[in-house]
Length: 100
Image (cartoon, rainbow, N blue to C red; front, side, top):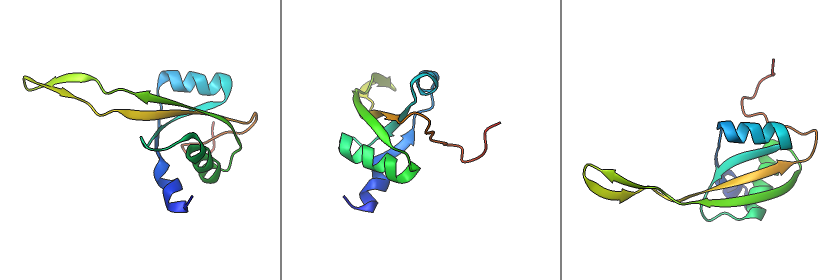
């Protein structure tokens, strides 16, 4: 897999209350990823970008909500998220600084 593809697989980290509690309790991180990515690509991308060892990757396809936009029925886009578990003692720092 090319380096260019690795940089495109991970779209953004998901920073929610649930993902923060999961990260603190079981050393997992949640990422929004491209819809065509697979577990191997996600694992390689996280290991290369954050320099950690990945134990496991779980993928969830999130269906877009049906909404009404100005009295017209519509649908938000489907997307994919990945739960990535890193080895014990390793940390992914999204802020890039020292924690206080």
